[in-house]
Image (tube, rainbow, N blue to C red):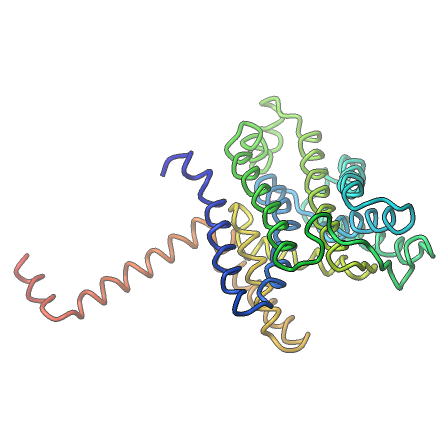
Length: 333
């Protein structure tokens, strides 16, 4: 497959999959709401797949950045009379600026320490929102956020708009991975010292990617608050960040469609599994199996090779069982 074809494979899969599910939603309208949930998770998870899978930088603060974007937009709309069309810019810029400012000191840390620090950052954001009094709605949260511009609260149009944004992010992701800066980011993941010796400005590049990931998460928070009309400190937080990391690891942190696949699996499994205890047991077992059998996720090259072997072996077995196959094979010998 040529590089040009590879660039458009992931967007094509997104478009075809979305159209199929939305058509099925005519008979099952709840699928439209499910598609919104998947799209929201995918929009938060895609930039994490970029900075973690391509740059080797883990973050447990994506949910908190989404909450920061949601609260920024909700406060501007409910307290200062902004329209959602205008509040989308601060909703993206605010978490991006916060992420850029804290990136330089924390991105030098090892992977485990970085995960703990970003998780702690999520706790700080949640506590700050809870202690914000009437300004942030305290523990109760903020309600009355106006609906999305142009599309309102119509499930089909909301899901379509959200997935259009997801599609744009996937296209940009696909092109970035094959660009010179994408290769530089991969070089940072493989060997930071080697990347620096080749002229890559590692602290700046990682800080920019960290800020972009936070800004896209803030955009997802904007969609969230103006679709539901409500946001609380525990709506998007540490638990969301943990779920997002699970989606990236499950689907494939180095594959463009990995976060989308992980978001799809998580959402449907979450809908069908009964009870919170069952959720924890199921997702924990899946995570352990993935880390043991395919550390780079379902869409990793290793997992794809295993699947190809299984299907080719099954195909050979099925052909061997067909009448007359044995005689043909013997004759060919």
